Image (tube, rainbow, N blue to C red):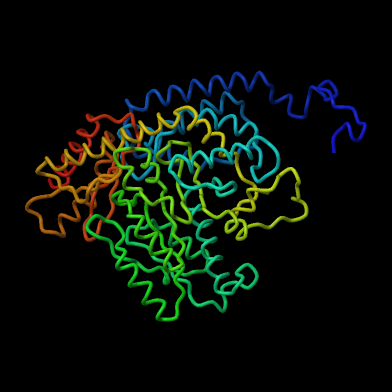
Length: 499
């Protein structure tokens, strides 16, 4: 109902008091001055990152100052708070903003996303639904993400989440409910009781968030079958078929296959076409974990690896990884909007809102009710670079990764452990003269030794029976000199450990 309908006058600015209860502690000018100071502080921090140690352990006093900070009895001026941030927080980063950070899958923040985060926080809406900018912007950026990776996107077929861990829960819940419904059960009404055990299929390289999702959804990790992979690290479809047939013969209910668009260990991309064929034949939901790697489809040099990705039933991915959107921001995409909404839609009377339109509220498609305004930083990051700029950045990273693989192959002290398929390079120190156990111990200790030196940052993992180092390249500002420094630091740290 509008003011015209009621006859009420439209409120005027002058009808509201200029002062409010906090006016004595806060003013627009205070905020403006502090915002300018914050911009200078953050700009200096970002500009100085390449010249700083990538990461250094915090000293005990600095750590205790944060851990044991007392609850303040009185407030502090904004300027004083900024000074504390500059002195106590910014000097102790994780390191992922530095171009010589090769650890885990953590990107540097995109500058446009950093700026947009401030504006989103100033608006501070709940992006659950309704007719306001953040809701419509989220629908747009989810569509943009789907277009970037070539995934079919019906209206309402996705939403932003805190990350791929939550996106995986959303997608697997829809897969679970569909399987139960086709077996004659309504999980939302009756739970899992009475159903044959639902079985999913993963590989040894599947991210741990899939197991967590299976546990939280009541499926049980015991009913996640580990399927073999080939020498290239990809899911073996023959072993998958055999596992499905065994489980059906045992009276179980196969329902899910999880494929990867870039494994966490080596960046391997599964062959989606044959997996999708088998899933269609066997009535299985195909979910793709594209947390980091799905955006590799933007690089023409490796785009062929993603053929068939568009045939998946769902895809989970993280704009806060390869796109550099500031944390947190994941995305769940599904082919069938009705499956997602049927799994989560619950609209109490106090949330009924005709302005939400036919698609309803985002809270009908996932678990969150109050949802942060994630869309603005995604919009700003993508709009700032454009598809062409994002593709160029990603191609730069994959090219650097292939170059790093070449440098490892050419070095007698090092060994490349897997083909470089995306932008992760898995390698280890050969440690000539050591037995296998001692060599594994050296490679297990190497990442921490390299990190403490402060010049580069790399992490480790296990690949099959071997301890390894894994360098993940997500920063287009990285140079070949940085790659050479990484390998030099690994070899120097190994000599120190062996000494």
